[in-house]
Length: 518
RNA sequence: GGUCCGUUCGUCUAGUUGGCCUAGGACGCCAGGUUUUCAUCCUGGAAAUCAGGGGUUCGAAUCCCCUACGGACUGCCA
Image (tube, rainbow, N blue to C red):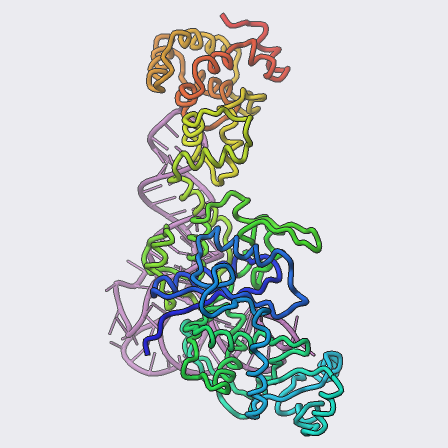
């Protein structure tokens, strides 16, 4: 029995896909690729009331951004379509009816309200062997009674009939053996009164029909897995039942509980891959892409949350991940989300991004017109700041002074380094620059060194103010590299007292206008 | 409440056949170095009595039991 590996990611289009879902999709992808199998995208939209417009498109776009490609599914079709459950609607009922004929399911007429009342009135109420014979269903009504209600158009559901006193043992690829007594299971609804199957039926039928070999899904499904095993058994598919792997949950960074939609914006970081605007409430949620994350970094970070290669490697391309991934190295316990580490990964990837990509991002963020069209200039500017930023979105602010004269100066630097003699020192160096060759930062540095040496000046006393006048800031790339890039004209302009004096706050101007530069 | 799953530095984790573990790595934190500055980078440090308690064993983070704590599920939602 060496069937091809076929796994699926089966989200419900009820809103944006959060990172836990993305990780599930990623692990499915890695597992499929590692085993030379296929990954299928199936949309589980059997709940018409929870459908959210745009959610399906969001899922596709998010996964595409991450580099998770599907072999079959709603977008690219395939031999087992359609891949949207609402479009497979008619296919599920016969299976439910088959189960009724075999005595593994029954028709139930209890309304949602009646059930709710029972749950409220009786502690731990559930429809099972101990209660089903006092409910309104085909078991208690008999064939004639059931037919009569059906003929009258009474709404009904189809429930599985869970046997009492059996033990269901299943093998989970991550957790090992999991066993459950059927007595604690309840007669779950398989087919709803609106003509749609529930998740339980639809998922089992579709996984079987689509020849799914492994079901890799979140831990929240573990409690209902025994029910699914029973369904495979009753439907006669136990021999080809997929293997199960239940992934640990992604936990919130503070306190307890699983990561939820609202945690992100409360804690100040995204929980969604892409930005999302809820079409009903208008509420927006931030996304990793918009926050300036590189998809490679995002994927790398996510992959390591709940899985590890057993080596000390931290940085993985998608290809590396495919090669290294195995289900047996997936963690059992939930993983707490750590945004600081996500940032670190992003920095790592930012460091080896080609300059052209950085420049492209900068241009896209700043908009045309505000930046010089000189590609090389843009790339060099980005290259100089790349190790000083965490996000792509830091680029415009980090490179601003390459394109515009600073409008203000760092006040701490000003207080600490701006002395009475500073303007004179600047003027002295500035004069030497008039004839200098700006093409090479080292030449400029040579001139500077000679200047401070011959005049016996402490280099910091002039370098710091120089940087401030040139960039407005206290830190950044090497001063001479900046000068070389912005060129002689810009450098000299920014070093001119007529230019910088008006920018220096009043108290300090008072100091220095008394002693104009010599 | 019930059922199931889980529990190694603050966080992600190594440890999977019990001995090489005085528990390793990474993020973060602290200190020092490199750098004209910031960042990067380098070096070092603090940080887990392996949830607690019992066993089994010459020997347990690793096997067994109990307890505690946490989480998920408990819907005509997925």
